[in-house]
Image (cartoon, rainbow, N blue to C red):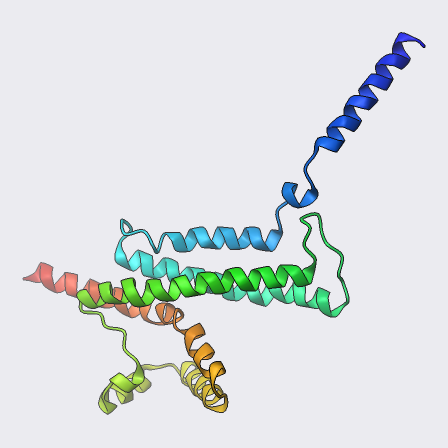
Length: 208
Protein backbone atom coordinates (compact mmCIF):
# COMPACT_ATOMS: atom_id res chain seq x y z
CA UNK A 1 0.00 0.00 0.00
CA UNK A 2 1.39 3.40 -0.94
CA UNK A 3 2.19 6.16 1.53
CA UNK A 4 -0.61 8.32 0.05
CA UNK A 5 -3.21 5.60 0.54
CA UNK A 6 -2.02 5.06 4.10
CA UNK A 7 -2.27 8.78 4.90
CA UNK A 8 -5.79 8.93 3.40
CA UNK A 9 -6.91 5.94 5.44
CA UNK A 10 -5.41 7.40 8.62
CA UNK A 11 -7.13 10.75 8.06
CA UNK A 12 -10.44 8.97 7.43
CA UNK A 13 -10.09 6.95 10.64
CA UNK A 14 -9.28 10.09 12.65
CA UNK A 15 -12.31 11.88 11.23
CA UNK A 16 -14.52 8.90 12.08
CA UNK A 17 -13.19 8.83 15.64
CA UNK A 18 -13.84 12.55 16.07
CA UNK A 19 -17.41 12.07 14.77
CA UNK A 20 -18.07 9.35 17.33
CA UNK A 21 -16.71 11.56 20.10
CA UNK A 22 -19.18 14.40 19.43
CA UNK A 23 -21.97 14.78 22.02
CA UNK A 24 -25.57 14.33 20.84
CA UNK A 25 -27.22 17.23 18.97
CA UNK A 26 -29.40 18.08 21.96
CA UNK A 27 -26.21 18.95 23.87
CA UNK A 28 -24.63 20.86 21.01
CA UNK A 29 -27.58 22.98 19.84
CA UNK A 30 -29.81 25.42 21.71
CA UNK A 31 -33.53 25.64 21.20
CA UNK A 32 -34.33 29.04 19.72
CA UNK A 33 -37.38 29.71 21.90
CA UNK A 34 -35.78 28.55 25.15
CA UNK A 35 -32.69 30.62 24.36
CA UNK A 36 -34.94 33.66 23.95
CA UNK A 37 -36.47 32.98 27.38
CA UNK A 38 -32.93 32.98 28.82
CA UNK A 39 -32.41 36.42 27.29
CA UNK A 40 -35.67 37.75 28.72
CA UNK A 41 -34.75 36.36 32.14
CA UNK A 42 -31.61 38.49 32.05
CA UNK A 43 -33.83 41.54 31.54
CA UNK A 44 -35.88 40.83 34.66
CA UNK A 45 -32.76 40.06 36.68
CA UNK A 46 -32.12 43.82 36.55
CA UNK A 47 -35.47 44.31 38.30
CA UNK A 48 -34.19 42.07 41.10
CA UNK A 49 -30.99 44.06 41.52
CA UNK A 50 -31.22 46.36 44.57
CA UNK A 51 -28.41 48.52 43.20
CA UNK A 52 -30.56 49.56 40.21
CA UNK A 53 -32.75 52.67 40.86
CA UNK A 54 -36.27 51.75 41.93
CA UNK A 55 -38.18 53.08 38.93
CA UNK A 56 -35.67 51.48 36.57
CA UNK A 57 -36.37 48.16 38.27
CA UNK A 58 -40.10 48.69 37.75
CA UNK A 59 -39.46 49.46 34.08
CA UNK A 60 -37.37 46.32 33.58
CA UNK A 61 -40.16 44.19 35.04
CA UNK A 62 -42.63 45.87 32.68
CA UNK A 63 -40.29 45.32 29.71
CA UNK A 64 -40.02 41.62 30.58
CA UNK A 65 -43.79 41.15 30.39
CA UNK A 66 -44.16 43.26 27.24
CA UNK A 67 -41.51 41.10 25.57
CA UNK A 68 -43.27 37.96 26.78
CA UNK A 69 -46.59 39.05 25.26
CA UNK A 70 -44.95 39.37 21.84
CA UNK A 71 -43.11 36.08 22.32
CA UNK A 72 -46.37 34.19 22.82
CA UNK A 73 -48.15 35.99 20.00
CA UNK A 74 -45.41 35.20 17.47
CA UNK A 75 -43.10 32.37 18.48
CA UNK A 76 -45.36 30.21 20.63
CA UNK A 77 -48.19 30.71 18.14
CA UNK A 78 -45.83 29.38 15.46
CA UNK A 79 -45.16 26.26 17.52
CA UNK A 80 -48.90 25.68 17.92
CA UNK A 81 -49.29 26.02 14.14
CA UNK A 82 -46.70 23.26 13.71
CA UNK A 83 -48.55 21.02 16.17
CA UNK A 84 -51.85 21.66 14.34
CA UNK A 85 -50.13 20.77 11.06
CA UNK A 86 -48.99 17.44 12.49
CA UNK A 87 -45.30 18.30 12.67
CA UNK A 88 -43.77 16.03 15.30
CA UNK A 89 -40.18 15.81 14.13
CA UNK A 90 -37.55 16.96 16.60
CA UNK A 91 -35.11 19.65 15.55
CA UNK A 92 -31.38 19.72 16.05
CA UNK A 93 -31.92 20.59 19.71
CA UNK A 94 -33.82 17.35 20.26
CA UNK A 95 -37.20 19.01 20.95
CA UNK A 96 -40.31 18.58 18.85
CA UNK A 97 -42.88 21.46 18.81
CA UNK A 98 -45.15 19.88 21.42
CA UNK A 99 -42.29 19.23 23.84
CA UNK A 100 -40.97 22.75 23.31
CA UNK A 101 -44.39 24.20 24.21
CA UNK A 102 -44.50 22.17 27.42
CA UNK A 103 -41.02 23.32 28.43
CA UNK A 104 -41.87 26.96 27.64
CA UNK A 105 -45.00 26.71 29.79
CA UNK A 106 -43.05 25.25 32.71
CA UNK A 107 -40.34 27.89 32.60
CA UNK A 108 -42.69 30.84 32.08
CA UNK A 109 -44.91 29.76 34.98
CA UNK A 110 -41.89 29.39 37.22
CA UNK A 111 -40.70 32.88 36.33
CA UNK A 112 -44.24 34.30 36.68
CA UNK A 113 -44.37 33.09 40.27
CA UNK A 114 -41.02 34.73 41.00
CA UNK A 115 -42.07 37.97 39.33
CA UNK A 116 -45.33 38.09 41.29
CA UNK A 117 -43.35 37.76 44.53
CA UNK A 118 -40.88 40.40 43.35
CA UNK A 119 -43.70 42.83 42.61
CA UNK A 120 -45.84 42.16 45.68
CA UNK A 121 -43.12 41.72 48.30
CA UNK A 122 -40.38 44.08 47.15
CA UNK A 123 -41.25 46.64 44.49
CA UNK A 124 -44.74 47.66 45.66
CA UNK A 125 -43.63 48.15 49.29
CA UNK A 126 -40.62 50.18 48.16
CA UNK A 127 -42.86 52.37 45.98
CA UNK A 128 -45.19 52.84 48.97
CA UNK A 129 -42.25 54.06 51.03
CA UNK A 130 -41.91 56.88 48.47
CA UNK A 131 -45.62 57.72 48.68
CA UNK A 132 -46.66 55.70 45.61
CA UNK A 133 -49.31 53.16 46.56
CA UNK A 134 -50.67 50.69 43.99
CA UNK A 135 -54.16 49.71 45.14
CA UNK A 136 -57.08 47.63 43.86
CA UNK A 137 -60.39 49.19 42.83
CA UNK A 138 -62.18 47.88 45.93
CA UNK A 139 -59.69 49.82 48.08
CA UNK A 140 -60.64 53.15 46.47
CA UNK A 141 -63.43 55.56 47.30
CA UNK A 142 -66.16 56.21 44.71
CA UNK A 143 -64.89 59.75 43.85
CA UNK A 144 -61.41 58.35 43.21
CA UNK A 145 -62.78 55.74 40.80
CA UNK A 146 -64.87 58.35 38.97
CA UNK A 147 -61.83 60.60 38.61
CA UNK A 148 -59.79 57.67 37.32
CA UNK A 149 -62.46 56.77 34.74
CA UNK A 150 -62.52 60.35 33.47
CA UNK A 151 -58.76 60.24 32.92
CA UNK A 152 -58.76 56.77 31.35
CA UNK A 153 -58.69 56.68 27.51
CA UNK A 154 -61.84 55.14 25.92
CA UNK A 155 -59.89 52.11 24.64
CA UNK A 156 -58.59 51.38 28.15
CA UNK A 157 -62.13 51.67 29.55
CA UNK A 158 -63.42 49.13 27.01
CA UNK A 159 -60.48 46.85 27.80
CA UNK A 160 -61.23 47.04 31.51
CA UNK A 161 -64.92 46.27 30.94
CA UNK A 162 -64.09 43.29 28.73
CA UNK A 163 -61.66 41.90 31.29
CA UNK A 164 -64.19 42.32 34.11
CA UNK A 165 -66.80 40.45 32.07
CA UNK A 166 -64.37 37.64 31.29
CA UNK A 167 -63.48 37.24 34.97
CA UNK A 168 -67.11 37.25 36.09
CA UNK A 169 -68.03 34.65 33.48
CA UNK A 170 -65.51 32.11 34.74
CA UNK A 171 -65.51 30.14 37.96
CA UNK A 172 -63.10 28.65 40.48
CA UNK A 173 -59.46 28.22 39.56
CA UNK A 174 -59.83 30.11 36.29
CA UNK A 175 -60.80 33.30 38.12
CA UNK A 176 -57.72 33.04 40.32
CA UNK A 177 -55.56 32.31 37.26
CA UNK A 178 -56.83 35.42 35.46
CA UNK A 179 -56.13 37.59 38.49
CA UNK A 180 -52.70 36.02 38.95
CA UNK A 181 -51.71 36.46 35.31
CA UNK A 182 -52.61 40.15 35.27
CA UNK A 183 -50.87 40.99 38.55
CA UNK A 184 -47.40 41.71 37.12
CA UNK A 185 -49.00 43.70 34.29
CA UNK A 186 -49.90 46.37 36.85
CA UNK A 187 -46.28 47.44 36.52
CA UNK A 188 -46.72 48.67 32.97
CA UNK A 189 -49.96 50.51 33.75
CA UNK A 190 -48.63 52.31 36.80
CA UNK A 191 -44.98 52.82 35.93
CA UNK A 192 -45.44 56.15 34.15
CA UNK A 193 -47.69 57.50 36.90
CA UNK A 194 -45.10 56.57 39.52
CA UNK A 195 -42.33 58.20 37.53
CA UNK A 196 -44.31 61.44 37.13
CA UNK A 197 -45.18 61.64 40.83
CA UNK A 198 -41.62 61.03 41.92
CA UNK A 199 -40.44 63.73 39.54
CA UNK A 200 -43.06 66.16 40.86
CA UNK A 201 -41.99 65.38 44.44
CA UNK A 202 -38.35 66.05 43.57
CA UNK A 203 -39.25 69.37 41.95
CA UNK A 204 -41.23 70.44 45.01
CA UNK A 205 -38.31 69.56 47.29
CA UNK A 206 -35.93 71.60 45.15
CA UNK A 207 -38.25 74.60 45.26
CA UNK A 208 -38.24 74.47 49.06
